[in-house]
Image (cartoon, rainbow, N blue to C red; front, top):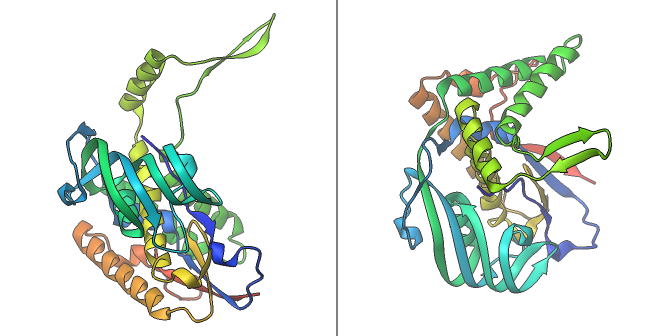
Length: 313
């Protein structure tokens, strides 16, 4: 399975320029928000045969290997990483991101696939391989544990005498995503008195054996982490394309905007998050106060919202 992390990139319109009066917005705990509110692959992936986006069933997660022909970005900001492509032909590159190309091949989730089709003009595409898994929410106990850490972190933040408790809860809270994408399958490291330390490269049979061992004992799925970052990127980038020529720089869970942007885009997204959290709270029968606890000053801190960091510089 192909892993892709956070989106970090600047708008080429503003390369080598100093931009003053930039507004900054950060998602409140972007990864934990998508872990507790979005659905994830819940069954073993099985090979399927789909040929176009219209065949994608919203109740299934898809892992796809796709070949795009004559692909050209619609926006000033660009999104597909050249390094994540297994094949690239005759491309124009924007600091590692593809502006246009005659042909690329890439393995990606259904979330990324749909976003790329919306953000790039594509002459045609071929789905070379496809696998699917049933979408479902993460186990309720895990969701409740994430929310417990969020409540505690929020309660202890900026409280004199609770600095250690805050740091402990914050570390636990932030590690929950990372645990799902920790690579446990590594080359063996061997020491002997003659040659010292050496790495023994794993064979395909070794890798398959270790994967089967991990499947029996792991308590989190690698797919959780893959879809977590895909959802977080999608939440950010769907807003970026609406604010394209005002979006100066993005970094995983934040966006920097020059003056003149449409503030309604930010407000509309935050309203969407509030409705989504209300829906999930009702669906999973988890009190909404867990998703939106009060801090030490009595201010409600709801997960996932764009938080105004005020004007920079």
